[in-house]
Length: 320
Ligand SMILES: Nc1ncnc2c1ncn2[C@@H]1O[C@H](COP(=O)(O)OP(=O)(O)OP(=O)(O)O)[C@@H](O)[C@H]1O
Ligand SMILES: [Mg+2]
Image (cartoon, rainbow, N blue to C red; front, side):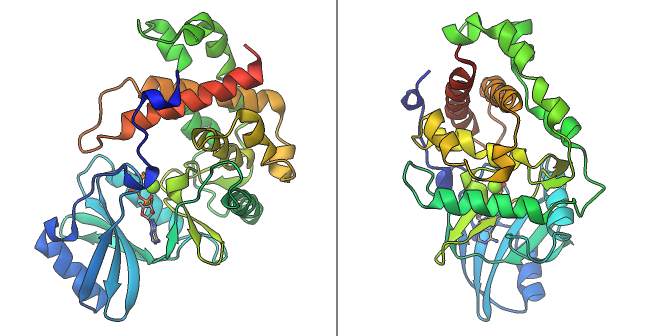
């Protein structure tokens, strides 16, 4: 499987979101009254995949970032989880402050401090890699012990998602790649070991990827989109950078090398990381074969590219 086999849409232009004007006027009126300011401009953000509203609002008296989704949307629970989490992060977490959240006009609404930033460039040689990796490492230290003890355990919530080879092995798709077919049983065995090492005492973000990170002009990194948090071992948020670095043009060697020196990465057990790479490869391979969710046209092609990257990582680590 090669990366250029699939559409390579930048992560900043993957979501199909409504414009501000397309939103129900009850919602817009509520936001305007709540903010106490006219909305001069709404810059819709197209990073991410969910079809909810995500916009930077320019007001007469400042700026805010707003996310909203209809109350009865299948993803509304994720927005509520994000509000619960973002609202209870320690003040020095490198994440925008949640100013307000609630329900109005039938929508779940979150209003954050606006961050004037861009998604990190994870291509080889980019200084953003060090910025992001050190910010995640510092964040892991800050969020240990986990300040939100009611969160699910990584061994349950993340493990429920991050697997695929076992499912694919029950009825192997005819177009599965040759390497994947040859190693399907071994990959099925390999993809579960990490789960026994997933738990820990850190608040894990659980969805680290470039479109959930912002770099500001003073070269600091902010982490957004706390919709899939859990309590777990800190190595997960750091290791999650690797497939994204490979997607951005790294070899597995150079991607891993970029993390050396961060204790959270240096202390991770090699067998666990190999299993984790296989689990991501299986997850993305499995998910990329499902039909596209309504209003999310670019998710499956992204997952095919992500699967190719995670397979490359798994090949490197296993030597298979
Ligand atoms: N506080 C903020 N200030 C400025 N821009 C932000 C802020 N939070 C998020 N963004 C931008 O908006 C985009 C979408 O936000 P976010 O990732 O929170 O939601 P989402 O993409 O809808 O969720 P998902 O990633 O699950 O699809 C991000 O990729 C980022 O570019
Ligand atoms: Mg996002």
